[in-house]
Image 1 (cartoon, rainbow, N blue to C red):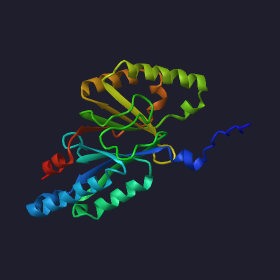
Image 2: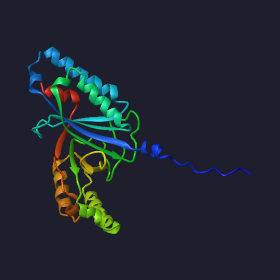
Image 3: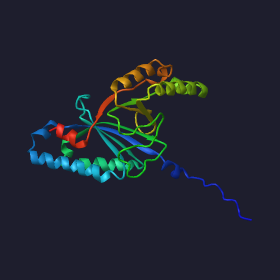
Image 4: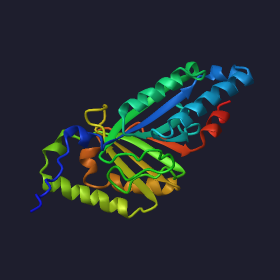
Length: 243
């Protein structure tokens, strides 16, 4: 008689490897960069493009312009990887590039989700968080950190579940907006990071207005700023637009 195969038990290390780390990082380009010789500017930009290409098989990364939406930052990189240290390696490569002296990091929202990121995925993302998940193909991205009230954590599981279902129902009535909520507790200052993706900013605003009227908003909006409005752009377009 063949012995029954025991179910495989995953170690805590194996389970943690299934998590995807998510980072939304914004940067400001020093005005002095525009004063450089055109050849020096071109060489510096090429090093940034080279860094993006070097890491494309190790993490998913999408670029967004903030030129018309934020005064303190010029562009945003949305990154997703299975290894947190990849973000550090990428940041180091940027810092050591010819562009590095002219780049200043402004925001860095770090979070995590249960599902891992397939290797080499640069165009699309899996559904990693709550909601329908992001694809990286929407024209606009809206990112905000979220901190819940202490009262939220004192509610019963049934009460929280009811409000969560109400929240999901509202999101479901706005199919043109994709939402991903990832957990940041223990990793960063916020508890969660909410990211919305859409081709219509008006649709996003309609969704936000309805969400703010929900009961859950009484407990979930201790802090939800800065809200970053980003426009999907090719990295070359962004750096060329900056001079």
